[in-house]
Amino acid sequence: MIKKICCIGAGYVGGPTMAVIAYHCPEIDIHIVDSNKERIDLWNSDNLDNIPVKEPGLSKIISKVRGKNLFFSNEVDKYIDLCEMIFIAVNTPTKTSGEGKGMEADLKNIINCAKQVALVSKSDKIIVEKSTLPVRTAEKLKEILENNKKEKINFEIISNPEFLAEGTAIQDLFKSDRVLIGAEQTESGKIAQNKLIDIYKKWIPEEKIIKTNVWSSELSKLASNAMLAQRISSINSLSALAEKSGAKIDELSMAIGKDHRIGDKFLKASVGFGGSCFQKDILNLVYISRQYGLDEVADYWHNVVKINEFQKDRFSQIIIRNIKTSSNQIVSVLGWAFKKDTNDSRESSSISVTSNLLLKELTVKVYDPLIKINQIYQDITTYLEFKNINQKNISKLLQKLTVNDNLNHCLIETDAIAFLTEWDIFLDIEWDKFSKNQHNKSKPKIFDGRGIIDQEHVSSLGYQIYQIGNGDNSIN
Ligand code: NAD
Ligand code: UGA
Image (cartoon, rainbow, N blue to C red; front, side):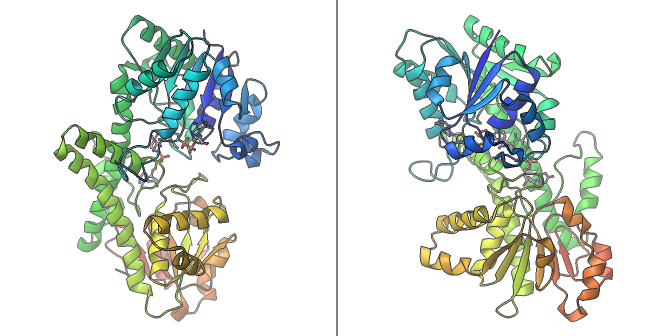
């Protein structure tokens, strides 16, 4: 029985997954370690509002387990050495330089973890790949561990990819559709696999725990994300066609989703998928396919990302076309998070759409209930730098950007209101009230990138509205 777990990486995966294991397994001590001191300090903050990952239900669980059997620390070496099972949940972004730039997963953090584990371990360890990794990464890890180890010890590597979605992480972890555990089909591999199964069995029904070999497990994670993203790109591509042909995308989604072979999930048309994983994991899949000489396979998946870019650009151009009648026009961007109920803005569609608006010299006001002002400026700066805009021009563009902490300020004194995240509070906007305060002539145009606005109602109040995938739009 495992008694001590160390998890390297206190992020959106490491924090919630370990909190849930700690909750269900009070007999196991879990130490989450991270090289980022600021992040660890926030996890240890007395005020639970300050924990760095905002997820419904997370702070309640943290309050129950933190200091009892869940601990956060910067002492990475100490807890690697102390624990029998090491989860690696560090970030694996797309490479930004060198060979594979913009496509391949950057495994620098994973490699550093493996070296560190090898150098400090004085006893056998089970290493659990929790991060999303290219297929056959376990092979590389094994090599690094064997080449750098200081003692005559055994490392067993198992793959246990994470399928939680942000915003619903706790419910996903409590009631997982499946838990995937891939191990080498050797005696020691199977023992390690069973030790991890014993942990999950505490709350996950056994029939939902899937045993595979390591490569199937690693590849299944990339494939699952690719299939989910593919559904979004499929419906988003059809949203463009619906607008041209007079159809309504929500009606299409409903009609298609009623076929039980297709199902109704992940068919909500949007301004494009965001988040730290879909794009990076598909690009990684594309890269791996090319490495194996499978160009047709690579091209097929690359189109999922291309359609996503098309959708974000299409939405930006519709705003620009309809607003940029003179300079000094103002656009309110509502929502910065890549989806509701998370404080994560990585790869959010808001970033590229807002950048496109700023580059066309429009003034932009942003509101988001959870994303901090510094993060918004940082996101835009990083994006523009990536587009090779120089610092002087970036500073100039940022002068046209303001961030409001009050939703109502974004609804008034503006020429356009663009919905980029589907936050519930946006459903409560009192359009009747605003309509009375706004002369017909000065009513802002509405651009709904999430299909959340009651189009008939706001149109009846005299607003012009563009809604993604709606063939009845008064703005095109
Ligand atoms: P994150 O950026 O939120 O957290 C990663 C943490 O690892 C950071 O705090 C960073 O400081 C730390 N770290 C990096 N290298 C380190 C090292 N060598 N030593 C100590 N700490 C180190 O990332 P995340 O969103 O939690 O994602 C982690 C992995 O899980 C990624 O591979 C991602 O693809 C995958 N994943 C993410 C999600 C999600 O919803 N975010 C879901 C499933 C899988
Ligand atoms: C996604 C997967 O759903 C998780 O299973 C996976 O573990 C995770 O990636 C990961 O590997 O990181 P996440 O990105 O957190 O989770 O959130 P999703 O709910 O999948 O949404 C991703 C993006 O797609 C969001 O921008 C969302 O608004 C958008 N989306 C989702 C749509 O536009 N339409 C839909 O129908 C569903």
